[in-house]
Image (cartoon, rainbow, N blue to C red; front, side, top):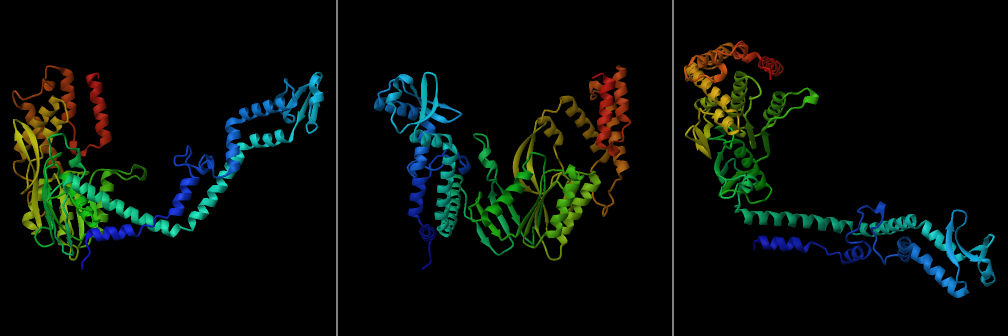
Length: 506
């Protein structure tokens, strides 16, 4: 008879040993909520465990009260009303008796000092108390550490059982967390097998969907990858449209499925994956002399050198850290490598702004184009965040700049230049050198300059900044027009910007 999940859970729970003796001793000897969490500071061992420790604590906390009680008791027993207990650095605690009553002093008292009007005595009790009160803190710490060491030795005898219990409890805690989150967030049970297909229907990001504004739901998407028909999904779309979230949620769903969790999707069929490679986000390593682009290339190289037939590769904006032509060429070559690898057809999601890469679908049979849809309404865009078949040629970067709060003049000027760039270039995409439509970097820079100059000449569309009746603005315009945008380094650009600020008197 096949065992059920309940049977397995009960069997797992049955392996837990309550260790009653260990639990009882810990409850009896350790404070449940000690003031200090380190045995070196004391205050960890409970009251009632060691009589000497309890006595020392009473002395340390109530030392003055003990002295008062001793003084009262001795005064009553000897009939000396003026008797007092005091302390000095010479011989510690003592009893002082005025000369008028020295004949009442018991023979067990030891005289230590004679004054003009009184005599001072010590007793065995006072000396014992002195030793206790002066060394109470140190002794308390030593006793606590001794008891704690004894407790550790006792627990060591049950170490094997404790470790097995810890493993069982950890596993139950993990499964309980999986079950709770699956119920709360409507996860489904994935199907895992030894095949090569990754088929996720209406998948969601397990974190982002919990952060959505009230009344707004996460838009789910389908992802299908295999080694025969759709090995590489080329995903285009504007910034903020959800490309990176789609890549991340795919990796998380695969990872959750293989660790035994239900997943955020309507259904998921996962062929076993051995590695998940990601090249997402921008970072640098300045201390080692590595730029953002260098780090990107190092990570990309590591991915290509370590893929297998069961790997998942997630690439986001490869090549964006260098010039357009270099970036497109590197991205194109990487996709070709992943597609044409003789033994490792790693399933790949490739998010990019290089719309020219959509050409690869016609040249590589297992590359398929997708885009994250948006809707343009009244010169603004609405992100629909839905993955759809086919590529796109629009990035909507200027719209995103407007949404980010870019000054209106900058946005308007960018729109003018974009319109003239499109007029200069037409539909000539920039693709790798296997096609005849490549332009040189110098030609591209010349095209940008021509587009800027054409925008300046368009009646009624110039920014007021470039009206030629202001000699300062003419000087700024001329300084900008002379720039070789394609050859500028970041430092040179900052220096030029500083010069322009000086011209404008800012």
